[in-house]
Amino acid sequence: MAKASGRILLTGFEPFGGMDKNPSGLLAQALDGSEFSGFTITGAELPVDCAQMPVRLYSLLEKIQPKAVIGLGLAVGRTAISLERIGINLLDFKADNAGNGCYDRPIIENGQAAYFSTLPLRAIEKELHSVGIPCYLSESAGLYLCNQMLYTSLHYATTHRHITRAGFIHLPALPEMVTGTTGAHQPSMNFETQLAGISHALSCVAAFLEK
Image (cartoon, rainbow, N blue to C red; front, side, top):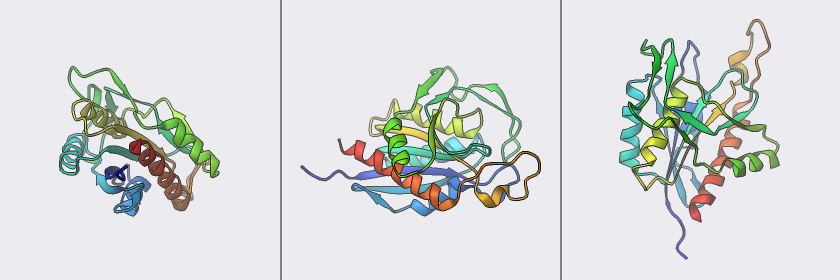
């Protein structure tokens, strides 16, 4: 049997909300060009701009023609890597990096209400737990650009059959991002653990693509 090959698109986001870094973008850059079971990772950073993010995402999907697309995003306050189960057709937030605000706005006009992730989430969860990396399944990707990226990629996959897996993973803040935070203690996870976790997730996805 010929060895499987192709590309997996891994996206992260630029910093937002006054923060000077975003682990999702850093991870996408760090893993760019790596290989898992014959699949090459293309890492890319997306803008935190609800108008320009889909343009950039569609451009990458058309150019790369990946077998799978995995979005990464930052969720300050989360205690572990969280595997998003569902993307909903709704945007509702005060402002992105371009100053755009969205209120009760569909991502895709007349689009399906929601899509379930097609990543092997249980397999990823089991793999990360086996190596001692905190991880859980999440029922909400929020109503900001992380949810927009998840819903948009799943919607795209319904009409572009070269994509067989699509989904989104949220990451905790890095320790240096919450040092000195006032009020309640904020959870964090170091970059090395996040890198190991996403590497194991990519390995799981590549293994499923081989089947």
